[in-house]
Image (cartoon, rainbow, N blue to C red; front, side, top):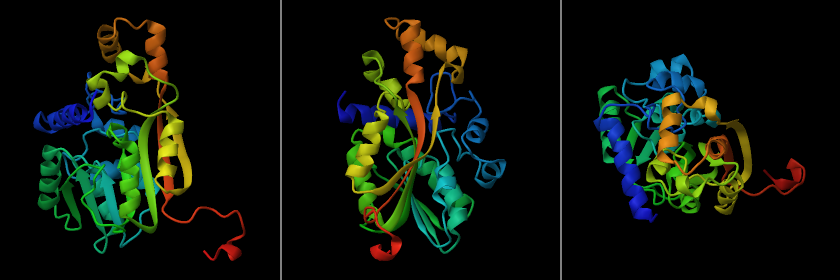
Length: 289
């Protein structure tokens, strides 16, 4: 599958969540969502609290995610935050409350319908410290060293060039800036039938990297202090019977064991790293900070 075909398919898929006014949590999707039809319940299962759901405008949470990067990021008042693949603005709106009126949040998304909804919600509900920009995360519309924190929630796996995405995140971060992402990765390779399925790519599965390759891409971009802050396995029990039956019909060449193995290969991880000097292996006093 070529890059442009994938991007077009992903853009159309996520535009549909807005134009059809539906969440990710449907029988034909995954996106890390295990609570069919209920994005709120899905978010609670990913580490968000009831107070988070109540704090954002209605229509911002589409159930798109596989973790809670805002909670991981330990955001401070006055910081500038970039949300890669900001969607309808759920994490961006939460981040805006953490950084306060002296801070700033910028969301970047390649789907015009997502940008339109998020921008409308921000204006309607008075989020003066939030803005949303149309763009691709492989070529961010931001200046060098302009943000303190980069967050992302189950989006980098959709990129057709993960290495470039992490290099862009590194570029726009200030020295000492932090990367905090939740994403889906693989414990082992998927069957070829799934890897070549555009719908499976849009559902955050077919384009996912092996966990080791994902972490290597972060380090290769220049980040240091890389750590996996959390990890969760997926499995057949996380999918509805309807979704499992749809998978059996979609991939008739795959037996039950292969389908179970594919489902069990998916991991949700929370990754953190820093734009700064690599650890020198000595005491803090000799490193000069």
